[in-house]
Amino acid sequence: MITKPALKLAVRKRAPSKISLSGDAARNNDFLSVYLVYENEEWGLLVEDISQEGIVGKSPLRFLLSKLLFTNKFFVAKDKLEQFIFNRKTLVRHH
Image 1 (cartoon, rainbow, N blue to C red):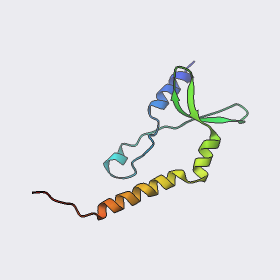
Image 2: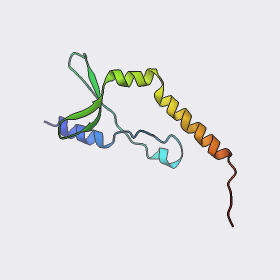
Image 3: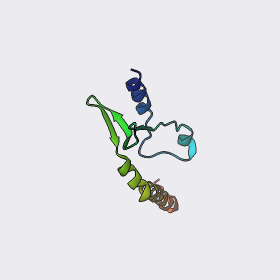
Image 4: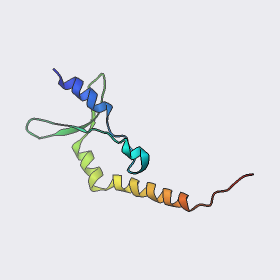
């Protein structure tokens, strides 16, 4: 069966918790998402890892809640605000 090796290969390129969207780091973005859906589409799973015990993932409900609550946009906005504040600070030079 080629499913398990394919899953292991895809999980190696799993997106990190923070993804660079600009600069040199953004040019190297190359990620995969694996979503398993049961035959009758009653449930699914966003695959995060493959362990000795089996597949580790996030339930669709948890995934959808994070999308509905804009948690990802909150963290992006927070990072942008922190960067904006940092960029406004005057650097102290030591002689």
